[in-house]
Image (cartoon, rainbow, N blue to C red; front, side, top):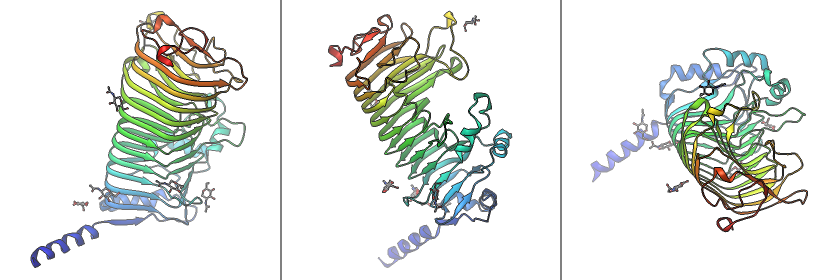
Length: 417
Ligand SMILES: *[C@@H]1O[C@H](CO)[C@@H](O)[C@H](O)[C@H]1NC(C)=O
Ligand SMILES: *[C@@H]1O[C@H](CO)[C@@H](O)[C@H](O)[C@H]1NC(C)=O
Ligand SMILES: *[C@@H]1O[C@H](CO)[C@@H](O)[C@H](O)[C@H]1NC(C)=O
Ligand SMILES: *[C@@H]1O[C@H](CO)[C@@H](O)[C@H](O)[C@H]1NC(C)=O
Ligand SMILES: *[C@@H]1O[C@H](CO)[C@@H](O)[C@H](O)[C@H]1NC(C)=O
Ligand SMILES: *[C@@H]1O[C@H](CO)[C@@H](O)[C@H](O)[C@H]1NC(C)=O
């Protein structure tokens, strides 16, 4: 009995002692990445059973990227503020260099937590995006922009309570990861000039068993963009304002083979967005996207609530392929759009050739490249009060899609009512 107690006491003491908390040092106007990188490289113990703390009360200058070592059981806690360099040209030179890790903050390993602060005044990461947006209104000048936060190949992880203020572009990217919970994060990519915050994606998601919930995103590109490969991804209980929608894709670029399945997007408010739910795949793409559901979506002034296109192209580069021997794309199998309610902003147009700007749904498909697509329980009105429309080519669909498939007024059918 005594012996057992002693063993227990010793082992719990050694577990407690094994946890290290490292406070990231800060020095004046210097680049705080340097001291952190030196500490991480000198002290390998910081990569296991450790907390790396950016402490409250301090505004850190992270003027060069941080690629953390492969972690095991590590918490990176952002309780202080962080700012990027204000100098766009210097930062571009860093992104252009061959040693750039691809993101400003890179995480990998097992059981990795990235947490922000719940104090409204602290824990903000200010990337000085406004300077970039103002400098880069011309498409050709949009080069060497730093991506934000990468969870790459993380096995079990969490991103919680992070707050991004004016990220330059592409906020969070979770790729090749499994079992990651991304919740309660805030992204404010709002421009205070006439410059558009281009490519400020909220969450880019690839991997397996990813749950995104309770996130708030104001931005100028996809709120969510699911890439390939991806399976079992949930995005729910969130708010997206101003961006390009809850997207799957773009898939199949350059003829690549997409593999996306079991995606559920539910209970999201989309406000002032170009699209609500969007699927985009490139002409010539291969592979399949299967079992994808968007449901319980509230629309407030959304230009186009539901949009599938297999004719995706980069709007900055060209008008898409007109090559007739290229008329195919990633296959769509079982897509459900259910319970979309709210208003369509029909004052701006939706950018789709031939549309009226009053469509609730546009299915832009090749022939024989999809099955079991359905949009049901749809209840929307246009802001102007004119009729809600749809665009759909009946030669491209193989089932009752829930509404009369034509270019005309929205009329629910048996499957859609
Ligand atoms: C880290 O902590 C776990 C217990 O959570 C322990 O099993 C493991 O040995 C520790 N690793 C190191 C390197 O201290
Ligand atoms: C995972 O990391 C957390 C800290 O974020 C730690 O409390 C927990 O013990 C770790 N899990 C395992 C299985 O080591
Ligand atoms: C989410 O963030 C808000 C504001 O920072 C905070 O009040 C709330 O407790 C957080 N929720 C969780 C689950 O951490
Ligand atoms: C932290 O950064 C945010 C966003 O830039 C800012 O609003 C806030 O005032 C900063 N907090 C402090 C205490 O400086
Ligand atoms: C479809 O995906 C959902 C998760 O999004 C999953 O719960 C369900 O089992 C999948 N259905 C099939 C038939 O695989
Ligand atoms: C059209 O695409 C096919 C298949 O990729 C290719 O072989 C052909 O050269 C393309 N034609 C033109 C005019 O680009």
